[in-house]
Every structure is written in structure tokens, then in C-alpha cells.
Image 1: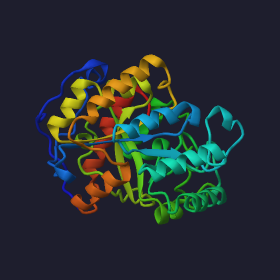
Image 2: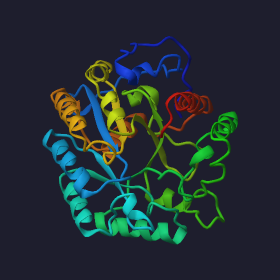
Image 3: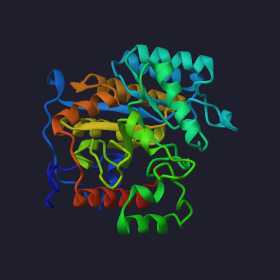
Length: 339
């Protein structure tokens, strides 16, 4: 078990570039900054986990083609099944052109990940069928997963992401609107699939922070939390919710900061939201090209987390560490919202 972090001064500092890092003012920081020996002598690590909301082949295939051309390999979540109103949310694996495109991504070295069975809540049998279908299509169980917003089968979602007073403050912040909405981890519920998650999914995304160096915010990820036993390992991410937030996160100054710290960024985004605008695509092209020229390790989320897990030796989070992660996330959520 890793030891709780200790309080101390900010090591290394932040460059307050653009809005993204200005949002950090006054927020509590995690202070332990690990030194990582990245494979192939690389100086830092960078990857993307793309939430499939609003994604269609037409909207995002061009973005992925450019990502691949620049040498990045990232993670793309998917839904297995359609649902009422699904056309408003994007395509699923039931759409043959979309599925064929996903399989093409996988053949290029991208990771395909799980985003629940569909865009609406799924009972246990539906989730079980989706996991089986995932394995049939992609040749293995999903390694990485992101909960889909307020689906009732989410694993430890809503206030269940937090403990104690932090959970109470979350409920107050949301005016109790989402209280009790997450049921996937509760035995006896029709939405329960905790045992399946434990058996088939390795990594689940949890907190999202306003800092490009995800590893500085959560230096012991991926970690197991005994208070949430049905998830094998949790990981954190950096906020790139939509095009504007993503591009602020990977600004020139922030790229240099990540490189200087030798850290790791797992940026959580929706490539289906805002990236198709010509002005955003021009900036995306410029910043990603700049980043690709640096000595970064550009691998999918599962590969990055496997490397950290091997290095850290299956860490179990301590109570004080959990409280710090929760408190930092709550403070930032009050300031900027999302994720």
C-alpha cells in the first residue's frame, strides 16, 4: 500500500497560461510529483480518451486521421447498442459504417473502450450482452471504461464518487437532483453489474482535473479503492471537455510545462463537440503538430496505465489520499463544472 501524501509547498509551479491554468488560482494542489522513467527514453506521456457522445464517422473520422498521421495513438469509447433518441447522441456499433471505422482504428493501434451498453440506462442483462458483444467485435473484454453521465447502471457515479462530507457537499451542490441515480454497484438492483465490471473491466475513469499534468493531480494512479471494490483500478484525467477546453489545456505554455515536469496527461474530451469548426480545427492542427514534435510517449490510455501500474505495484488508495482527490475535484467543479 502506498503511503498518504504529506502537505507541502508547490514544487515546480504552474505557468498561468490562458484561462485553463488561471482557473487553478486558490485551488488546493496535490504536491507529490513522481519521477517517471518513460519507455524509449521519452520525456513525458500524453494521450486522449474520447467520450463517444455526439460522435459520428462524418464528424470525427477526419480528426482521427490527423491524430494518426501525427503519430498519436489514443483511446476511443463506444456504445454497443442503439437506444430511443440515439440519433441525437451519435452512432453506435449497430451502425455498420461506424463499426467498420472503429475496427479500422483498432487495427492502427488505437484503443476501443466501453461507455456503457448504450446512451440510456441498461439493466443487468443488457450490460452483460453489451460486454459479450464488445468481446465478439474487438477480440477481448474492454480494458478501459468511462461512465456515461447519469445512466443508472453507472459504477459509483454521482454522489457515490465521493465519501463522507465530500459526498454530502456534492449532493448540496447539485441540489440533490442526482442523488441515488447511480445503481450499478448496488447488489439486488436491476441495474447491478458490479461483479461483471470487476471480472471484465480493468480501468475506470474517475475524477477530471483542471491541469495538463494528470499525474501530478493523481500521482498514484491507477489505484484500487477498497471503498469501491467492484472497480479494479481508477484513473484520473485532465479536462478537455469540448474543443475550446481541450485546446486551452494543450496550449503552448502547458505543453512546455508538461514536458518540463516529465509528467503524464490523459486528456478527457468529446471530439464530437466543437472540433469540426474551421477555426478550432486550425488551432487543433497547430497545437497537436507542435506537441508531436516533442519527445513524448504517445500511446493509448490502457498502455500508459499498464506502465504506471507495473511501476507502482497495484497501489491501494489510503483514506487521506482519497479525501485530497475528492476535495480538489469538488473545489474545481464548483469553479468550472463538467466531468
